Length: 342
Image (cartoon, rainbow, N blue to C red; front, side, top):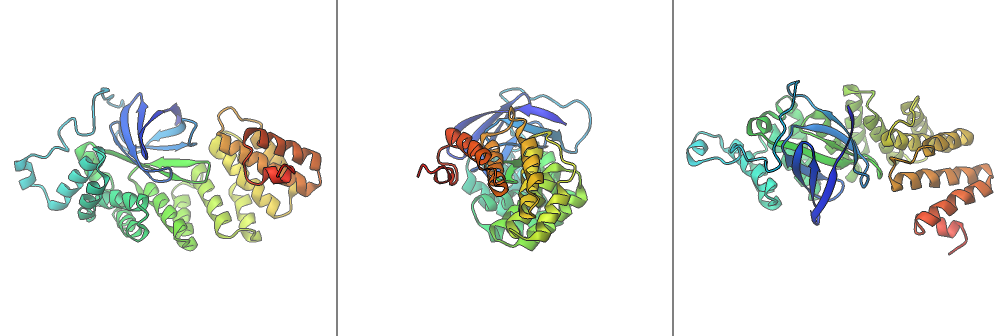
């Protein structure tokens, strides 16, 4: 695993072209629910929106050297998404619908893609894509139904994508500062279901999904961050919840933007428990490194520390942090009001 950079070029509202050494891909959708079709295999990626910095690992597949596609190559360049008349005669209807849906999506025809993918929902890959698009469209009941079907068929996920040379990934928010980009496997489906259940405020179902993610990989910082954020969102101010968040974030160092965001939630939980000096120290640790941190993350860390300083009665230090926030982003939260400017 390691860091890599993607250069993003916005080509239309909600559509982004991702350019990297592994080739080009096209993402559709607003922040919070993106779908990508492109060459290069499936990867799990954690990134901070706006920074271009992603933490990437190859998921599954055969080990060894990856084939590097040419710059002109597209998902259907090898013809596998271009089914001729005779091939359609021997291809099952749901598989044909999946292929058509992928081709329409790669061409930017989202409505047509969704209609075809709904017809392919008997296939786990079809259910996965239909669920992601339903989530993007705000059709949460259908998203739940399709994604749950994809989860039930988890052993066959990526079976048809691999057959037709499609790399399908999605981008989902973990917190306001961190987004995860994952592929068609159980972890990706579970993260999408967490988003569905959060939007529907079905907190226990969301927590059940995160707990399953922890079973799959308890050391994953993104999963721990997702759990911490969900707990704090579902049960704000609850002492037992704050103790759980402190336990989840135990031993976390300021190694990456993801870890820094987890430290933010640790500090929030400590503050909730009245452990103010501990919260201050955690936030100061997170703020020691700003080079590869997004503006949103730095502002959130500094704002939380200002609140802790206020609770400690250290008003001069609180004002110093608030003034730095105001100089950078005058409209951030209630900073102007606290400074007496408004």
